[in-house]
Image (cartoon, rainbow, N blue to C red; front, side, top):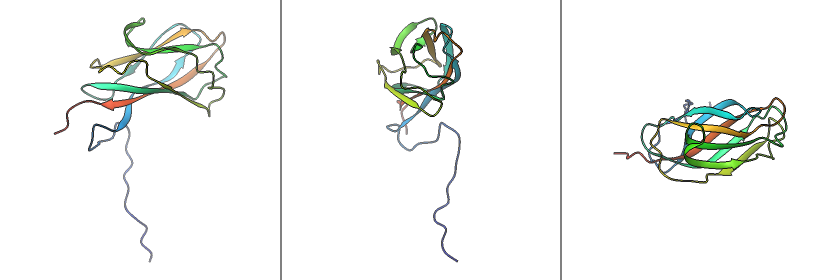
Length: 140
């Protein structure tokens, strides 16, 4: 019988990493309403300090041509703008992924990030937002 290869283990994010220098999922928000100005909470999955590197938007329910969103460290566009308002015009179908670099890479220690829809789409529209970055927590 042939060797099937190394065993693998699959687990949910955040995975245990041996280095805090790896890009990892910091926070996410599903079905963000992009047709109403307001906030959607994205709980930070890492205990400690983080720095956001980029934000992905995907699984758009419609072609996002008007909607604009941003990411902040406090609700109602408060705190630091981790991602300044951007229109994800490449998100034309659920299969498309738009990757946008963070506007601020300052260390964040709050428990939540806030995905703020700043401009309504004008029709029903939702999408999923994934926030990736670095875990700045000291590893022994």
